[in-house]
Image (cartoon, rainbow, N blue to C red; front, side):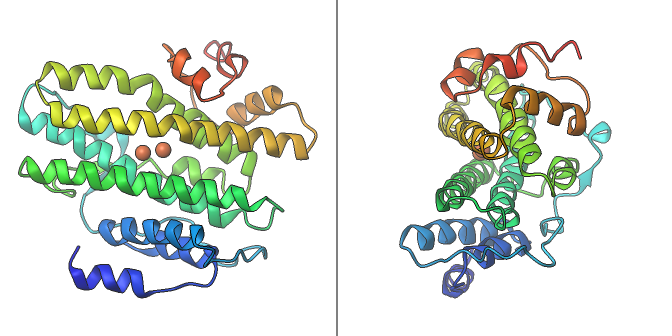
Length: 279
Ligand SMILES: [Fe+2]
Ligand SMILES: [Fe+2]
């Protein structure tokens, strides 16, 4: 981002956390989006942002996106092989695209559900996650640049916002599907991806993936914690509720093998996912 764009992002000083995260969702430029997310968590941690607890009006259903990359339906996405530099860049591009979506997902979580009587630490957790996702995006984007590519050079998956849209009115479902299914799936597949990049001798990418892997455990953990809080405040059984939300909002089945060690470290009960593969 240019110095001018950085200072433009930093000079906007919303009074409310809600406006700060809305600005992230509405920013099409990925670097400005990332800078705004980092600014929001900095302002929050300095006590500069309040929370408007009114139901949000005209909340964006979808985040703004740049003109590039071209977005394709998942079935039209080209296959990626890590043998060549271009193949690895294409895989890193796919991960950067996931992280860009993750910035918006965390900001949407913080802004969309502000009328549900949640503790301030809920907003603090998701703002901090948004800042992590911004850092992940920027690390992957820099790696792409170092390899001679840029974000936007490859087509990207168009289905990533679907789960957010489907769960836009249901906080328990959002927590179940986004951090506890999609991000938990990241814990399952990242160690294998690290091995493949290691085999290709790409240690620079391996280091980035190792950082992301460690951070993502805390994102799943935040999802589990707030899912239990919501279930407890609504006096419903968490395991039963998780399975209901899977049935209602998740197409297909959870895919084993599961990374039980990482899931357990993130506080995810085995009963949530161990018997759902046969549904
Ligand atoms: Fe991430
Ligand atoms: Fe994450």
